[in-house]
Amino acid sequence: MSSNRQPERIRPTRDETKAKLLDAAAVLFAEHGIGTTSIEDICAHAGFSRGAFYSSFSTKDDIVFELLDIHFEANQAEGQRLYDSSSDAVSFIEAMNSDERRRTMPVDDVGMLYMELNLYAVRNSENRPRLVERQRRDFEMMRGFVTQIVEAEGLEVPGEIEDVVHLLLALDTGLLLHALIDPETQDPQRWARIVTTLHTLWTSPSS
Amino acid sequence: MSSNRQPERIRPTRDETKAKLLDAAAVLFAEHGIGTTSIEDICAHAGFSRGAFYSSFSTKDDIVFELLDIHFEANQAEGQRLYDSSSDAVSFIEAMNSDERRRTMPVDDVGMLYMELNLYAVRNSENRPRLVERQRRDFEMMRGFVTQIVEAEGLEVPGEIEDVVHLLLALDTGLLLHALIDPETQDPQRWARIVTTLHTLWTSPSS
DNA sequence: TGTACATCAGTGAACGCGCGTTCACTGATGTAC
DNA sequence: TGTACATCAGTGAACGCGCGTTCACTGATGTAC
Image (cartoon, rainbow over all chains, first blue to last red; front, side, top):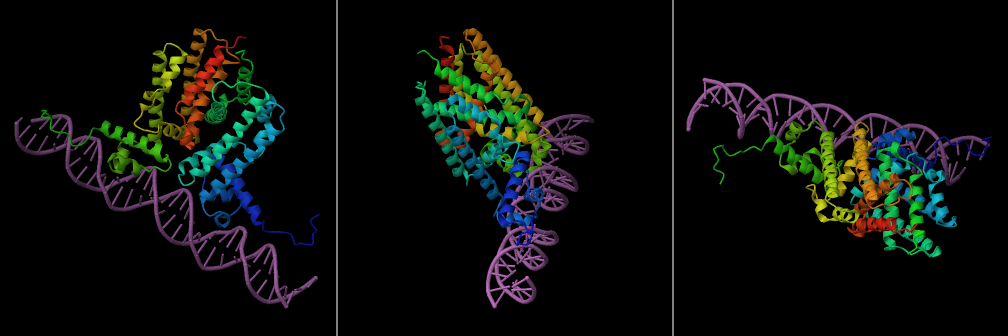
């Protein structure tokens, strides 16, 4: 099996260590919140001592924003991928709603992590600009989708297209937050149902 | 002027002190976040020493949840009031959108405070139930409004009425959060515009 | 109306703890001969 | 293939600071005479 020429590695690679710390942080931030999770907690969960942390990250903020970057890029890429592989609005909505979508990160509760990271960044005036930039990129991506769908299906938008984009993004965020507060009331199909209804309303009006 | 029989009060009333502390906390929580605001900060801003705080509140959590209660009750009452004094859906939307609505609390940024309080409570497993209960009351209030409007105007709801309610609440929350992240992009009229459009879409379809 | 006393709202110094960060160290990994 | 040495990833004890909370106190307010 592992009878390589190379001696068996005892110590993990620098990159492996960093990845383990990031994973641990993602799990714990999602579960307990960023403020309540100590660096000690992260290291213990990843199986390292505190010093290992400072070998990979310069500060606690550092790991938070690195996570935020990773999460954001993954989300962007996946949104684009799902859109590209969907033939029309309806199948896009379905794709966004599928279970598969939840598996981007090594965390059950991606939503909580997303919220945590965002609210942490909102308060951190020094890093706020990075968050703003990402939110605008989200907006632009969604605007692209909506514009193309509107054109492809020959819809006539009631009001500004920007408002539609804002509506869709806000709906996503709002449902997420409400689900976090009261998971029992949560219905995983609701997002798709509402968006589908909106799409139908849009499509059918005989002006 | 103040030539009462009673000697001039030097020390404020117990209630006055408590109110000042609550106001200070609301302002600072909204501005810097709950986690970053120390009790010392609150007391300094209100013009008291630390001990005064513990004369009115037993713990930091205590003041947080008291604020959350105050804010929630005010919001509920105002929503009901605006609804009662509106003749139809359109005027209700207008009323909700008016500037007047922002003046419930002694804080400019009521939104940030609301978000802060909610996210603080989400993480606080001990007090989560209280938050859940309030969210459900919000839901019920809005469900009442929507149901009555639908009946009064003889609309036919596409899909479940619960979904409509969730849509409206999530839209509110989501727009709020996005505005917090990127105030520049914020448009105070957007909420009313979107909801009006939705209402129109609802009303006009010649099924 | 004035005086003595009890109460208790508010003071501010001190305590203790958790946590982020530092640093002298150790031993695994990579390199040179 | 084996040995000596340099590097540096990761260790874990120690430091320092901020902050929530406590507590012995002081002096304004209310009450009894």
